[in-house]
Length: 84
Length: 240
Image 1 (tube, rainbow over the protein chains, first blue to last red):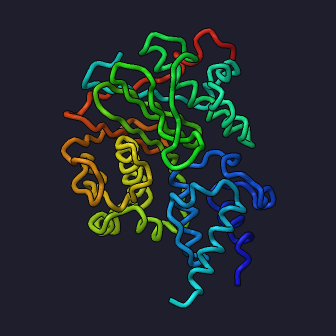
Image 2 (image 1 turned 45 degrees about the horizontal axis):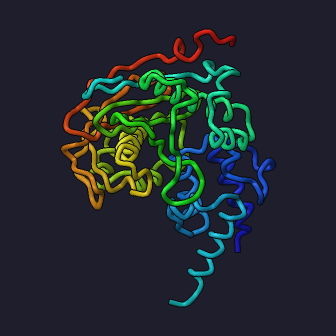
Image 3 (image 1 turned 180 degrees about the horizontal axis):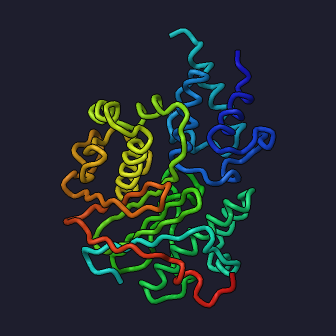
């Protein structure tokens, strides 16, 4: 089971250039600034490729903080593990 | 006031921001600005708001601070939606920020969307294009001479269209199929998008070096585009 928080922080660093050690669970996406549609799409594509959870942009924009996004990913992982 | 059939595009650089610009922001804009952790982001946000208000104030004949702009979002309660003017006169506007640049587009009697992107190397570009390009575009992109430039060309064109249509990324960009980069930009087909392709007119902008930019007009006819450097408008009588 990957540590979702660590993965998300690394991906946010890759997309925004803000060092991972400045990012915490409570980091608000609106504080990071320079956050364009393209950066949002890059982050979600990287999340899907790394963690196997597909989030649409609408869902993503509902996440105010890194902790919110991590919770959405955990929900996606749990849904995937339930038998169909 | 832009004539019907005209669109005015104003370019600004982060170096054009002045301390006095902060005073032009309304309370909601001030709150969004104060949330930003980094000065570079605060400066670019302030510049965007000041440019939009200064251009619209000039067009409407009111003070920049008196321009009423609604930024409500259809999906949540945060004020980060497409700017809508609360003034009569059929004006429409669009704003885009990237890197050190801000661009504002204004027209009358039609809808407008504008997008500027600083061109940066994209890790995972082969994967990202599958989220943005339609199948026919992908085939053409794979055979094209400039993968990164081609991607940004498609992206800015699609983003401009979706902004003009007022739906942003609530519509996946893969649902639009455009003409090849390197040919005159045109929307060819759409899937599940409430947009008549013959009403969409794309205009390549003179983006600064290292940037890509496009404007889309949704209306009866293509617009005559007039591009301006916003520095004199923004800095007149203001100390650096």
